[in-house]
Length: 400
Image 1 (tube, helix red, strand yellow):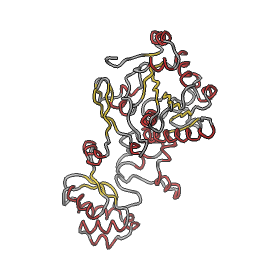
Image 2 (image 1 turned 90 degrees about the vertical axis):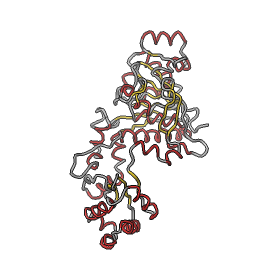
Image 3 (image 1 turned 30 degrees about the vertical axis):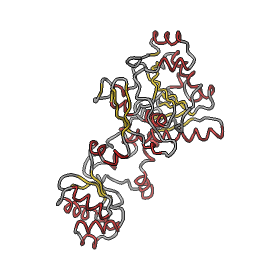
Image 4 (image 1 turned 60 degrees about the vertical axis):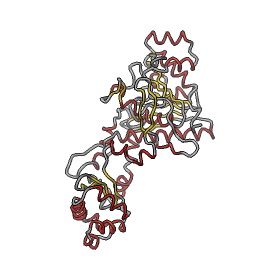
C-alpha cells in the first residue's frame, strides 16, 4: 500500500505547477480526479511533439489521474464540483485570485461543506499584496524574482532557466504543503487554506545568492556556468566536448592542479577566497589545460584523484547513463492510444516500505467523466443530461 492510499484529491489546476503537484500525490497513492474544461487543459495543445494527438507536455505531468471534463462556467458544473468537494481530502487550483469565488468554489464556500478539506491555491503572486490580481507565468516570474539577472554569460543578455523552473519548484512545494496540512489534520480534524505563489517560491529558491544580497545589499551579477563563491566551479571545454568541474575545497584544488600539471597555480592560489578574487586567471589556466585532452581522458583522471567532475550530457546521454538505468529513471505505462508510454519516474520511488509508483497513464480528455460522476452520486440519466447539454464531456478508451 502507498502512503497516500485512501486520500481523494480534486485537481482543478492546469498547465504545470498544479498538475505536477497532483501527479506527485498520485504517485504516492492518492486518487486524483483532474477537472478540466470540455476543451481540455491548455497543455493538451502545446506542441510539438505530439504522439497520436497527445502532447508530450500534457503527458509529462498528468500520470495517475482520472479526467473529468466539466464546464465550470455552467451552474451544473459548479454544483458537480461542490458535490465532489464534499468527499475530497484535498483540492488544488490555480485560478486567478478571486475567480473561483464567483462560482462559490473558493475555500470559504467549500469549507462550509467540508471543514476537513485541504485547499491549495497556486497563483502568480499570492492572494495578498499589490500584484495579487495579476496573472503569473513562469517566464515572467523568472524576471520578477531576479533569477534571470544571475543566469547567462556575464556579457550576454539575461537568460531564463531552460525548463519552467519556478513552476516545477512550486509544484513540489505544493506537494510538501499538502502533506504538512494532511498531517496536521490528524491532530486538529480540520483542513486549511494554502496560499502558495510562484513569486514566493522563486524568491525562496534564490538560496545563497538571495542571502548574499541580503547581507551585502549588492545584487550579484551573471557568471555564466561559474559559481559566485567557489573557483574553479562550472562548465569547461575539453578537446572534444564539455565537462563540469565542482572543486569545492582547497584540497580538491590541490589535486586538480596535480592532475592538470599546474603546480604554480596551486602555489599562487591555495585558498578559495584568493581564487575567487583572481577568478579570470584561474579559469583561463584550467581551461587551457583541459583543452589538451578529450573529455573522457579527464573524467577518468579526475575520478581517480577524487575530484568532482561530470560530463555535460544532452538528454539522450543523461537517460542512457548507467546510473539512470540502474535506478530505473523511466517508468513505462500502458496508454490506450500510444501503447507503451515512457514517463519520468518519481524520485520518491525509493521509500523502503511505501515507495511512489505509477498507477494510471495520463488520461484522455473526459475519459473518466461518467465513472467519476456516477461514483459521486449522479444517476446515469443525470450524467447523460450533462453530456448532452455540453456541461460535461465523456470519452472512452478504445475498446471500452
